[in-house]
Amino acid sequence: MATKINPSFTDELKKYGAVNMNACYNCGTCTAVCSLSTTDESFPREMVRFSALGLEEDLKTSLKPWECYYCGECTASCPQQANPGELMMSLRRWLTAKYDWTGLSGLLYKSLPFMILAMILVFAAVLYFASSISYDLEQMLHAGHNFEMIAIGTIFLIIFIPNLLRMWYFTIVKTKTKVGIKYYFTTLSELFVNMFTQKRLRDCDEADNFRWVEHLVLVLSYLSLLFTTVFLNWFTTENIFVVVFGYLISFIIFVVTAHFVSDRLKKNKSLNKFSQPSDWFFVIWLFLMGVTAFMVRLFIDLDMLVSNKWLYITHLTVLAQWALIIVPFGKWTHFLYRSFGIYFSKLKTLSS
Ligand code: SF4
Ligand code: SF4
Image 1: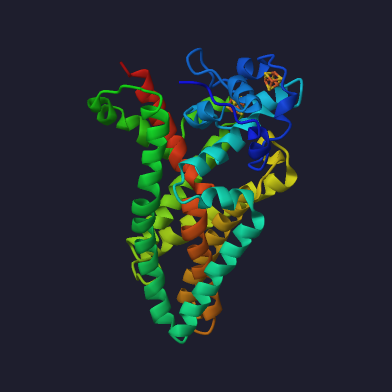
Image 2: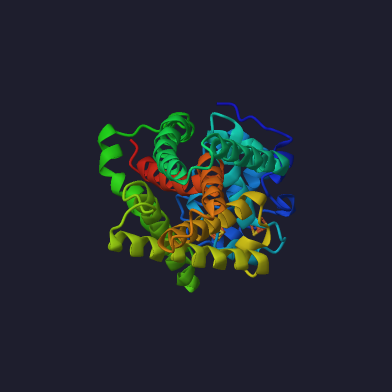
C-alpha cells in the first residue's frame, strides 16, 4: 500500500489541541521515559513523527494513541517542548472524530460555537417539552426516567456499535491482521478489566496512584448512579437503601469532579495545561449531573420539589445534554475507545 501524505495534517491536528509538534527533532527521549511504551508497542515518538509528516492513514489505523494514559512524563522530558503527551491526547480526539460515522464528533471538537449551539438546542427542546405538559412534575419525572432508558439503548445501537465496527475495520481489517474468532472471546476479559479498572493508568503513573484511585471511584460511582436512576428508579423509590446509596454516589461524583475542575483551573499537571473545550464540558457536566441529581432527590425528600420545578428542569437539561452530546460525541467516548483499543491491541499480539 502506497503511503499517502496529507500536507495539511498538522494544521488539522492543531484544531484538536496539538501544540508545537513540529519542534520535535526525533531524539526519542519521550519514548525512553514512557513507562507504557514497549519494544513492540513503541510510542509516543513515532506518533509525533507520523503527525509531523502527515501520515494520516498510518495514524488512523494505529491503536497506540489509546495506549497512552497521559501521565505527562514525556512532555516533562521533551527538550524541545514539543508536548508529545498533548499530541497523543489530540490524536485520541482526532481518532474519535474519524470513528464517528455521523461526523458530529469532529464538528463538536473543532467548533466551540457549534458545541454551544447544540447545547442551546437541547435546552430549548427540554423547555418546549416541559411547557407542552404544563410543567406537570409527575409527567416530567416519568419522562426523565424513560428518556434515560431510551437514550442509552438508542445511542448504543445507532452510534456506538457502528463506530466500534469502524474502529475495528480501520485498526484490524485494514492492517490485514488475521485474528482467530476464538481469540475475540478468550480475550474479552482484557476488554472488561481495562474498562472498569483502568489498571494501566496505575502503571503509567506510579508516582501518583491517587489519580488512578480517583478515576476508579469516578467510573464506579458514575455507573452506579446510572444503574440507580435507570433500573432502581432513584427519584421515585421509597427503598431507604437505594435512596441513601443514590445520595452517596451522587455526592462522590460531584466531589471528585470538583477536584478535576480545580486541577484544570490550577494547570498544575501536564494533562491540565492545554484543556480543550471538550475537556471542560466533560468535567463540568459530570459535576452538574452529580449536583443536580443530589439536589433533586433532596428536594423530593424535603417535599420542596413541587414548588421548585425549575430544579428538575435544570437536571433534565443537564441529563439530556450529557446523554445526547457529551456521551455519544464528546470526551466520554474515550472511555469506550480506549478499552477497545487495548482489547484490539491484545488481539493483534495473537494474530497469525
Ligand atoms: S517529542 Fe520531544 S522528546 Fe520526543 S522525540 Fe521529539 S523532541 Fe524528542
Ligand atoms: S503521556 Fe505518559 S503514557 Fe502517554 S506517551 Fe507520554 S509518557 Fe507515555
